[in-house]
Image 1 (cartoon, rainbow, N blue to C red):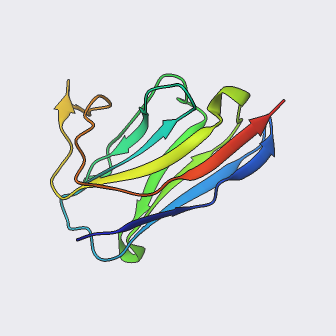
Image 2 (image 1 turned 30 degrees about the vertical axis):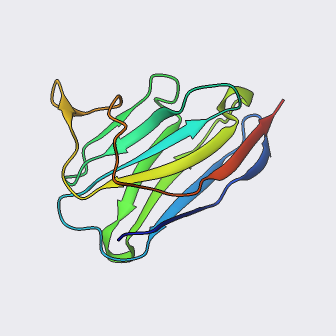
Length: 129
């Protein structure tokens, strides 16, 4: 079983940046789908960004132009570069993994699919004004 471990969370001022990492315990395969989700207290867990095995990505409207998802297959690591952080970005961030390719909607990795096979424990991000 692949285990996922997030890191890189913390507290920053609004407008600041953080880079989250999600390290997989072993090779995740050539056709995997990986994603970042977040959940704030009292809110549903929501997808922030998804990346398919071919590198194609999709982002929630709320983070487009500010967040970048990427992965380093040699290091079995998924990243989320977060720039221009806002107080409303404050949440616990989770990475998720499926060993098969992403579900596509209109040719883009789905942001509504939630039945990922594996989840990390999360890392807290707080942006204060």
